[in-house]
Each structure stands twice: as structure tokens, then as C-alpha cells.
Amino acid sequence: MIDDGQSTPDAPARSPDAPARSPDAPAPPRLLRARDLGAAASRLLHLQALLTPERMQGPGFAFAMIPVLRRLYPDRARFAEAMTRHTAYVATHPVFSGYVLGAAARLEAKRAAGDPIDGVRIDAMKRALASPLAAIGDPFFWVVLRPLAGLIAVLGIALFGAADPYEPDLRVLLCPLLLLLTYNAVALPTRWRGVGAGYAAAESPSSLLHALRFAEWREIFERGGAFLYGALVALLAAGLHAATSAGGSGVGAFGAALLPLALGFTAARLLLRRGAAATVETALTVLTLATLVSLAF
Amino acid sequence: MIADFLRIAFLGGMLSVDRAAGWNLMLSQPLVAACLAGALVHPNPEWELWALRIPIAVGALLQLLLTNPALPAAQKPHDTATAGVVGSTVAVLGMAHLHASIPASSAGLLWVLLGVLAGLIAAVLGGWVQGLNRAAAGADSRRAVALAAEGDAAGYERLYLGSLVRIFMLGALWSWCGALVLLAVAMAILPRLADLITVRRIGFTFAALLGGAFAAAYETHVRGVKGGVRWTAAGAAAAAALLLTLATEGA
Image (cartoon, rainbow over all chains, first blue to last red; front, top):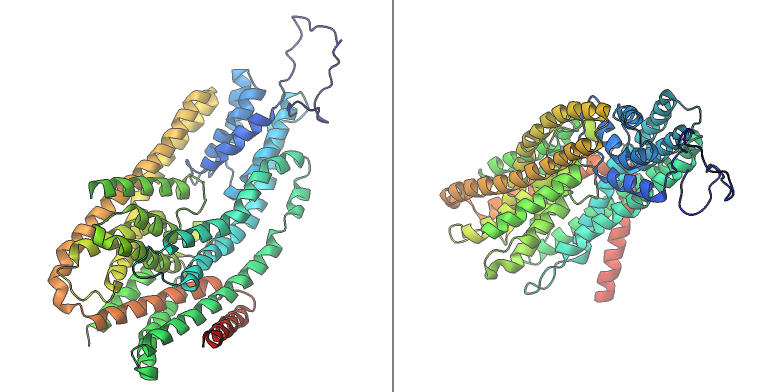
């Protein structure tokens, strides 16, 4: 149903010498153009601006679908019906939302062309695709890749080392860039491919889900995170040793520096075990406790 | 300073949109936010170099402390997007304005501590501010459904883009207010505590906070990972071997 200057398997063939349409005949279906899908994909960047518990990303999904629906349904009543359909509850991972949009656009295009596809089937396909994609995307992008990108940037701070005291410290630009590149090297290509892949696989969402290898990547990235955490600990210990031995105070000073570090680590771990989601409260508690203890000497 | 705060407000707005509207380019991660704020805030010329160094430390600590392994739905509604901006701004401007009244800053560690504290408080208070957006989104969502049922595409788009502007404005306003209020509080309180602030105390508190940051990172990257401790040990061994090799070659 994409009219991009090339014929597509779904596009209704029309010979150049076909008879002219009679005035009473229904208008031929309008074909979806690549630029309509492109406009819809770009709107997915704002998918969550109207996020609510009742409809989750539904209003954002409908906003993204407007270029597609406007093209397919010039008739206001049919447009309104389709818009109402797409404002319904949908919850997926933002990076994977293009897959759902591509598949929904394909089914809408078929429906507009007169195929026997009703709104219930489009809704069912969205749910069948959106929820599993959320189940794949949330643990991969939120739980593993995002923290890993942050850890790599922090490791970069330790590895690049401080610049000359009289020169600008370029780590202020390099390390954030490292974080952005690490995350977006995976996320942006996935977003980019999404609409096209979803459009192509609208009839068989299960094949689309099987083709995604993020569960396997997740294990690799998790182990990579643990490995890099170990490297960061070693770099911290080396840095601490260098800082304490610079004054010639040796092992005693190293132990004295290690003590508050160990206290902070232990207190935070105990607090985090009680409520893993309360990271800010834990940090504030550790900071308060450390300040109070420091007043003792 | 007015220009600084305008830049900070714009940055805070953009980062809020990145986090809340779905861009998710990770511009709103605390390290990125703190470093961008550090690059945008310009204290007096004699502090220009420090203005680049302190945000790195503030951002790194906030990055480790605020990284939460839980899914977003299971997290408390803290605003981690603007925490780095507010923390970094308070640290840099606090250093420029308070260094004369607090001589013991322990090579800038005091300002890092101040920035991290401001960032953590900003994350909690910013979460409350974001509650305003959530409340408005509920009402807008109902209006959007009505517009969709009428087939009013232009009205729907206006409403939706209005919600984007609201996210930006709230983020901008909160970054501006949060940084200003927390800086004012620091300027009012810290000079009165100058006698209590010693190099040893700053060092102790900083080290304990660093330990807390490593504990948070442990929860995220090691706990719950299959063979996590073994991989951590392997990483530490590899880094130690690399450091030893470099030290030997240097000698």
C-alpha cells in the first residue's frame, strides 16, 4: 500500500488504458506513501507526552498515526472512527513503538482498500505485538543498556584521567558523549528499522517477535556490566592507593581512606536491600549519616 | 548570572522533554545533564576550569546513585532528568560565591558534595513538580479522546503539542527555581557552618558517599546477574593486570 514510485505486492494494479471511472463509482483507495510513514515515525519521538495510566501511550500513538489516517481516510467519519480506535490503551517500549505503528498502518491501509479487516482485528494485532515488545524492551533497554551506558561513561572518567590543572577538562564532553553513543548505537537503529519491519510483518507478528534477539543480547550485556563494574572498583582502589601514598603515609592512610568508603557501601547496601527502588532516599540517608559521623572527629 | 539561569532553564526544559515525552535519547541521564549544565554555566573567569571539573564528579556520583535497576513503573516518581542540572549549577555557582567564606573546600570536594546533595533534593522535589504534569495529562487525555471522536485532527495536534510545551515549561521552570532556591539556601547556611567544615570531615563524607554510589552500582550491575560476582572479579583482575603492565612499562 506504499506509493513510493515503485509497485508493491499489495498495490492494486491499474493499466494505463483502463476505462475512466464513472462519476457514481466509489473513489479508489488512496495509497499510503513512504513519506506518510516517515512523518508518523518521526511523531513517535513524542509518544509519551500524554501518558496516562488509563490509556498509557494510546493518545501518543493516535497522534503518530494522524499522517497515515489522514491519507487513508479523507472522509471525516471514517477518520474519526480510526482515531478513536488508536487512542485506546496501548503500552509498549518507546524504542519498539515503530514496529507496532508499522503493522497498524499496514492493516489500516488494507482496511481502507476494502479488505475485510475490522477494527477489532487491528486492536488485537496491536495488543499481540505491543505487550510482548514491552516485555522484551523494558528489561533490555531500561534495566540493562541504560545503566550500562552510564557505567561506561563513569569508567571513561576514570580511564581518561584528569587533564593538566591549567587546561580545560575535556572529559566534560567526552564522557557524556560516551554514554549517548553507547545507548543510541543500539536504540536508534532499532527505532529506525521499526516502522518498516512492522509494516512488512503485519500479518505475522509472531515471526517479527522471533526475529528479535534482544533476550540473548541482554545476558551478554548484563555480564559486560558486571565485568566493567569490577574494572571500576579496581581503578578506584588504584586511584585511592596512589592518592594516599603520594603523601608518604602508606598503608595506614590507605586503610583510613578505605574505612568510610566501606561504611558507606555497607550502609547503602543494607538500605537498598530493604527497598531497591528507593535509591534517592538511600543516598540522602548515607549522606546524612556520614555527615553526622564525621562530626565526631 | 541571569543569563546562566536562562540557559539552565532551557536545558532543564529540553531534558524534561527527553525523559517525559519519549525521545529517550538519554540526554536526561544525570551525568549528561550535569556536564551540559557545567558547560553552560559561566562563573567568574578564575573559576572557568573548575566549572568543567566539578560537574564531572557531581554527574558521575549522581549517575551511580540515581541509576535504578527497577522498571520505570516500579520506581518512585523522582525527577532524575533535572537533578544533574540543578546539582551541577548549585555546585559551580556555590563555589564561585562561597569560596571566600569557606576556606576548607578540600580541593573542590566540598562543592561536589554540595552539588550531589542539591541534585538528590532536586530529584525528590522535581518528582512532586512532575506530579502537576501527570494531573494535567489526565484531563488532556480525556479531551484528546473527545477530539479524536469528532475527527478534529488539527485540534488533536494542537492539544498534543500543547502537552509537549507543558513538559518543557515545567522542566524549565523547575530547573530555574530549584537551582535558584537551593543555591540561596546554600549561601544562607554554609557560611554559618564554616567552622564545622574541615578537610577531614569533607574527605570522610565524600568517601562514604562514594561507597554508597558503588553500593547502588553493585545492586544494578552485579546483584541478580547470573555469575555476576565472578564477572566482577574477572573485570577487577583484568583492570589490575592492565594497571600493573602500564606501571611496569612506565618504570
